[in-house]
Length: 109
Image (cartoon, rainbow, N blue to C red):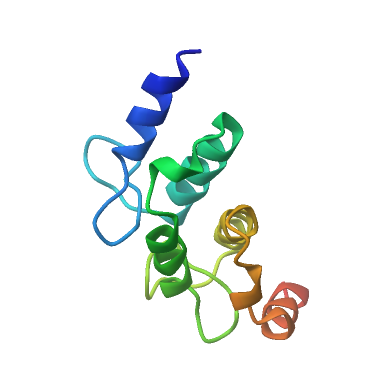
């Protein structure tokens, strides 16, 4: 794998608000944030993106029920929760999550 090219490609997907697009049509979704952050972590290049902006974007997708949606204002979804928690864990930012509310949301599913 050409690490430099992979890092360059992934880092260019980050948008001004910290989100990541997943295709040439510009779709934004927290799944892409997780994929980008996880990929760069595996490649040893988390410093290639604005990690704080990425974390802030993910946190903006957190809902009143403790879950996360694919974009700000989107309903909570267990797949999105997996992606957002994974990205926040990699970024050492799980302390922002309300574990009690999130646990309640998850146990009701």
